[in-house]
Image: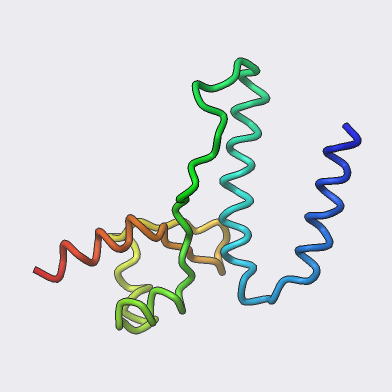
Length: 109
């Protein structure tokens, strides 16, 4: 348990040093890690591979999607229901990087 407490303390210090515009991405990643922890707690048998893949999907914030795909924030919010997204709270909207790239790629045809 001491290792866990140490990890939590280190995470807390890192969060305090984080820029506020990076918080939405952090929240998405924390939700992902929370799901992994729940799965492990409910099923203590190790998964086939406990190694985390090196290339992970990163969640993009609204400003990142606007910049990357050349759309406006207004357009993005209006069309979010048709797009792959996660909304962990009323004020936070995140888009899974690979899925949103595929979504835009299929619409450029």
